[in-house]
Image (cartoon, rainbow, N blue to C red):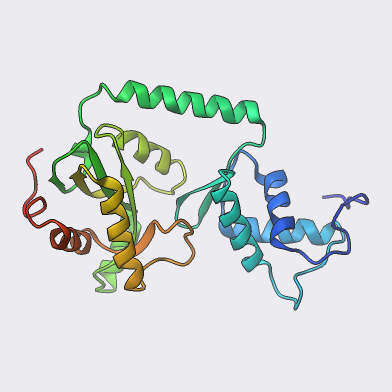
Length: 240
C-alpha cells in the first residue's frame, strides 16, 4: 500500500476513533476475522505515518472498543465468535439490504415452524430463545472431557425464522452450526436476558465476543436454568 501523504492522522497515535474510520475504509461490506482487523488496521495506520498506541504494543484494545461502538451504531455485526461483518457505508446498499431482510421476514411469517432442525425443543409459544454452536467447539470440549463450550444464545419473536437466522450465521462460520436447543416462549426477551445474566454472573460470558451473546456453556446447562425459571414449561421435550 502506498503511503498516503494527506493522511489525516499522520503523526497521531492510533485510537478507537481512528480504528473505526480505518475499519470502514478497509472492510466495508465484508466479513472478516477480528485478528485480521487488528493486523491490517495497525499496519495501514503505520504505513501512512501514523503512530502506534500510546505506551507501544498492538491495538487490540482500540479495535475492541471501536467494534463495540460500531455494533451499537449499527455499523457492524458480530455473527460468530471471532468474526465481524462490517456493514456497507453506502446508504443505498444498506437500505436495500434492510428492505430485502424485511421482505424475507414477511414471507416466512406464513411458513410452517422450522424448529425441527434443533436437537431439543422445549415449551410453547410463537417466540423462542435458541442456542447454537460449532461442532468443532463441542468435539474439542469432549476430547478434553469438558462439559461446556462456546455457544451463542439469541432469540426471535417469530416461530418460523430460525432457518434464516441459521443461514445468516453460517455465512460467517467455517462450518455449519448446530442448533442445540430451542426454548419456545411468549416471553423471549425476558427469558433471553435471564439466561444471559445468570451465565454472565457465573463468569461464563466470552470476553472476545462483544454483544453478550456467546457463553461458555452447553444445552444441558441452559435447560437446567430454564427449568428453574419455569419448571412447568420446560420439564420435557416437545414432540416435533
